[in-house]
Length: 238
Image (tube, rainbow, N blue to C red):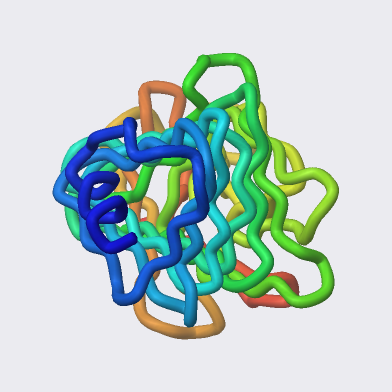
């Protein structure tokens, strides 16, 4: 009933154990906890929440888009099959996935930060990978500027974080940008150039894509530039 859905949206778990079908989009300023019964989005209505989502003994049947728009860290726990899921940030944000469950996506998975503020993708337990599965036949993805750690995407599509992504370790079935490292020498590989020298990268003859300073061993690392197979790279002292 409408009153039961309103109670559920207000955070009251004691709304029975039936099936709740949304009659319009649901926008929550807080957490969504489904402890029993089933919440159906119905007619592809969306669900937007600023807090976290926990699916315990209940079930979420989503035919629309679930949007996590909170400015604080958000967590998804309990195994759920999403149609579409979106988490986008313009300032630093973190989306935690429960390592004890699996999140599956049959539609579009959107995870997006910015060049200066990557979206952090983390497991709820450091060192134990959370499980994500994007449908290999019909799933699509839009993943940009994410920093991923402890994430296992085995069994579905390889998740493509090659645009601005960062591999922070213990990830499976993810693609990340190439990390370019090197050492600058003042002669033929004998004496390194030392610290504080600027090394720049141009891709396919374009403008400078990234610059880095050498460390005390003359070493530099490019970590943000998006490089694809077959690109022509020019690395020079600037």
